Structure formats: structure tokens, C-alpha cells
Image: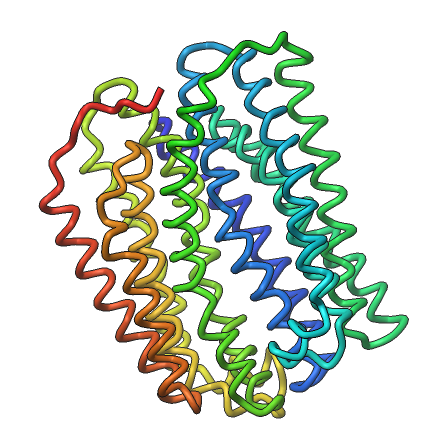
Length: 412
């Protein structure tokens, strides 16, 4: 068994377990809260997902440079990298979220939350996720995929256990969200223990901060657009649809995140793997095709389930109050599949710091958002706009990749 396959199996098992427990908790909470409460719950989690993807360059940059320093056998540089990013998040990240929290009331009203509580808790979840992404980025970059999978799985299991206990006290959106805070605290502590066991306390070595900054800016643009492609439809639905309808859309949005479950092991593996291949001057085209092909093959199963048994899936997971979500499942799942395929190809370019595709990738998201705001007044046009946008973006990314001519990597 080659290294790529072995790591893929480890990540598939670990992220599959993580996603299963995460989905069970989201469905359990949504069922208890009812459609109106689920609208606030899913909107808050979607806001978290959007912000965490938009700030995904933190973990992605840590992963990319850890992979490079690991190939150079320089644990001191990895330690310095981790300390630097933890310090930036601990200072600037906390200040940024404090400023946003100061505007919690108007933002909650704009997003049509019933109170400021869900938004404030979501900000705490975002901050803790940024912190844990540093440790997980190091685990990914050093190809410690077993440790990475164990960390995410432990978080999901603990969140489910705490969430069930909290919701037994009261069926509250705030309590449902608070479980995420407790679980992330555990994951942060666990990541410290995992990294200490691997390297102990190595002496810090100097790193090129200019290289970090040059990589971070285009990564921020790429991940912000990717976050928008995958989450903006739910935020628009929460804003324009009645509460019950938004909650129903949120149920479909939650279930179709099974595509994220399948895509996660490939996206976790792809960036450090491609970076390592580039460092060793090896071709990556066939590896990329194998990873994308494996993702599509796995995705056929849930796509068929959404196409053939959507009503039964909604009934079993959410109950009869959410029956109207059934017709939304298949087209939303197709849109998610296309979005994650585009994201995998984008990561291949990012592994070499080749970001030429951003000249159209980011503007296309702006066009999608404008179309949603202008014409997305009901669930059907929202889905049509999202699906059409993903088709166009994937076609453009395939054309960009076909025309791509690799240049020597020159980050460090």
C-alpha cells in the first residue's frame, strides 16, 4: 500500500467519524428546536463555516509551510511558525471579533436572528476554531494524519455528548451552540499534547515572514470566495425567506453537507501532498485526477440516495415538519459536489502559490451573490442560481488548469 492510499484511508475513517457525529448532532438539535429555531441554529453554524473558510488561509498557510519545513527537517522553524500564527490570532483575531461583537445588535437584526445570543456565541466558536486551526495545520503539514483525524473526531464526539446534555436542560439555540465552544476547547488542549509528544520543545529557528505574507494574501482571497460559494445561499435564504421556510432550507443545507464529509479527507491530504511532490520536483497531474476521481466515485452513493429517497431521508432525520425540504436535496447536493471539485483543483494551484485563477474566481462569486440578492426570493431560484454558478465556475477552473504551465516554485 503506497503512502497516498494509506493516508487517504486514515483520513477517510477519521473525517468520516467526525462528520457522522457532527451531522447527528446538527440533525438532533434541529429536530428539537423546530423549523424556526433551526433557522437561527443553522444560520449561526453557516456563519461560522463562512468565516472559518474565509480565514482558512491561516490553517492552509501553516500546513503549506509546515510541509516545506518538514521536508527540510527543520522542527525549529515549524515551532516558530506555530508560535507566530498563535500570537497573531491571539492578538489581532481577538481584537477583530471584539469589534464585530460591538455591533452585535444591528448585525443580528440584519441576519434576522431572534436575539444577539446566537451571533455572540458564533463569534466565540469562530475564534476558537481559528486557534485550533494552527495546531491542526501543523499536524497536516507534517503528514501526521492519524493525529489530525483523532483531534477532529474527539471534538465531534465531545460536542455531541455535551450538546445532548445541554439540550436536555432546555431546548435553546444558545445551548445548542454552546456545545461547540466546549468541544473546541478540548480540541485545542489535545492539539498541544499531540505536538508536544511529537517534537517536545524545539528551539525556534528564524523563518521568512515575507514569504508568509506573500502567500497569505492570495490565499485569503481564494478562501473567502470559496467560503461564499459554499455558504452564501443559506445566509441569503435566512435573510429573504420566512423563518419556517429558512429552517426548511437549512435542513436541506445541513444534509447535503455530506458532500463536505466526502471532500474533507481529500482537501486535507491534497495541500501537503502536492507541496511535498513539488518540493521533490514530481508531476502532480495524475495524483490530482486520482483524488478527484475517487471523490466523485464516493459521491455517487449520496447523490443516488438524495435523488431516489429524499422524502424518506427528510422524514427519518427531521420529521414531517420538514417535508418541503425533500425536493431541495438532490440539486443542492450536485451544487456542493461541483463546488468541492473546484476547491480541490484550486488547492493544487495554491500548493505552488500559483493564483492566476483568482482574476475570475473571486469576481464570479460577487456575480453569484448579486444574482441571489436580485432574484433569490424563493427556494427554487436560489437553488437554480447556486447550481448554475457552480457549473460555470468548475468549467472555468478546468479551462484554467488545462492552460496552466507550471513555473518553478519560488515561495521560500
